[in-house]
Length: 266
Image 1: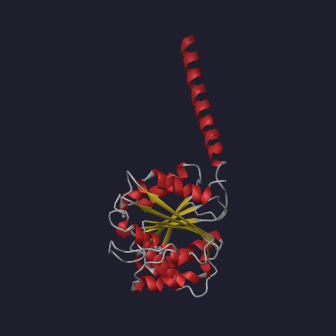
Image 2: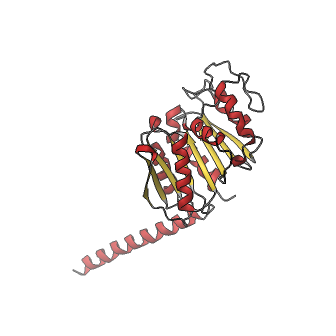
Image 3: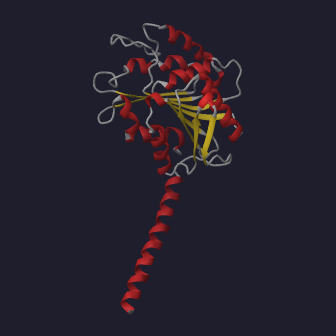
């Protein structure tokens, strides 16, 4: 009987120490990250989706960056349904956008809904795959806006709209061929929403200067579009395992690069 009590007490102590130790470890880990009330919005078109933006948000949460994930679901007639924790004064909140195919109108409603909840004009934006072009279309149409992008992250973006493997990008990011869509996005070069924005451009290279779908040259054409206004422009090329277009979001280096860029205390 006495031995049983000792075993039970021992097991209880192990459980308590494990819980306390885990909490302390998580707290220490979180200290490495900057804390702010600036929301980070993850956009990904349902056409390329499959819950991968949700996966990215959870990975960030599991790293101890935030405990707050809110979901904006775009439903019929571009209405926004909010699920999850949407309190305004929470640290490093993340909004994951899911639903039907994103349009300029639905993006506009997402941004307005976020502002009504978080009461801020400052945002971090993560754009996965082709949704970057829709978001840029939204930016181009904003004649007057009180929204400010603190950080912009693009993953596997196709900006030059050119599948020709002979596409050449100069040192400024300007492609040797200017497509109709790219010409439209040149208006971003003087877009005040990008004033002093920090930009991270992530792409995969499968050893053929593409991620299997998008040419690296086309992804690098982002630099010329945003450079005049932005304060920081960084390119990150991912090679090896999970460097393919739709696998990039599963890549641990991509995940850590995003976290370091947005929240690492340096």
